[in-house]
Amino acid sequence: MLDDLGIDRSLVSVVPDAAHLEWNGLDVLVEASGRVSAGYDYASTALSHGTHVVMVSKEVDSVVGPALAAAARDAGLSYLAGDGDQPANLLRLVDWVSAVGLDIVAIGKSGEYDLEFDPATGRVVQSGVEIDAPGLADLLELGDDVAATLAARAALVSTLKRAAAADSCEMAVVATRTGLTADVEAMHYPVARIDELADIYALAADGGIVSRDGVVDVFSGLRLPGEASFAGGVFAIVRTGDPVTWEILRGKGHVLSRDGKYACLYWPYHYMGVETPLTIHAAVDRALAAAPVWNSILAARTSVDLAAGTAFSVAGHHHEIAGVSPVMIDPAASVAPYYLLDGARLTRAIPAGEVVRLEDLEGVADAPLAAYLAGTTLMDSNGAHR
Image (cartoon, rainbow, N blue to C red):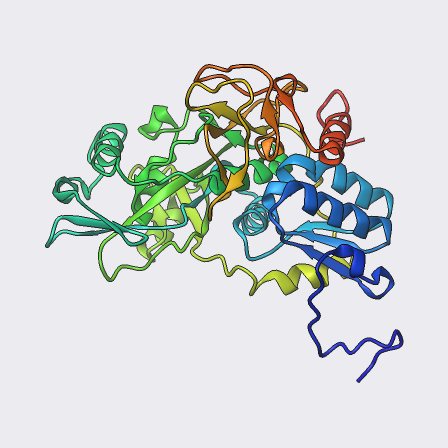
């Protein structure tokens, strides 16, 4: 059946690019290209035609999110992170925790792939990669020194690639909307079991690993064969405050720290794509959402010495850039966002360990660069959107 515009809504159409779209017939654009230049072009074009935007491409949002959100606000349109991926899910969890009135210490997610350890064989499997790590059998309990246990676990699985640029990008997106930031620029990435999270993400003064309140982080899920996975889900660490209530909840199987001061609230799932229709409906209903603000930026720190003329490109399943590592740092106008490096080249040699700055690059895509810089001006002296 055709609608008033002559469009058969029962069909799926595949077109090569946005130039072939009839914007007057579109209510919502779900942007999922994962590429900053293309994604910014699609999203900004959609907004200019009165079309709401659901942003699934965290790479795009980590560079031009504030500018796109401002454009949407000025046009009376929605710009929302897509449910089903961790940023939106974590933001929903934070909204719920805040509405309940609990005091948040840390928030985050698990890495994409669990570490499955089989004590019978002493082997660990992560996403099809298998290594020997029999020493983990003696480290399945945190013990009295949490930091020491976590360091020992990390050493045993050091040959596995546990951190991904996608993780850092997702947490950077969450940071821009919550004001919470990374405790250390590459995040802690502890190897952790679910029932340990409230002890691990306690303040260091209470035996945990975080130095302050308001932290975003990622952990590598450690489980035994047959145990349930965290499934790339999201968590919030809160202070308990009411010992009687929380001890009752501990008895019902909820995750509390051993000293009873902290609890872990978590959603062990992220159904990518399955949940996104919720956001599409919310966009049409013009649901309000926190505007992204540059309180933290996903930057690129060189992991090796790089020569002048080095070209950068995003590649692989996790959309990573060779030669640089993603880090979450305080924003500065001179710092180049990690994903803005795609397609650019270095104008000078940079030794390992330095943050790449805009002045170090040539060939940066003009439109996203302008949008990024415009986004950095959209804050008042208190860091709030104008």
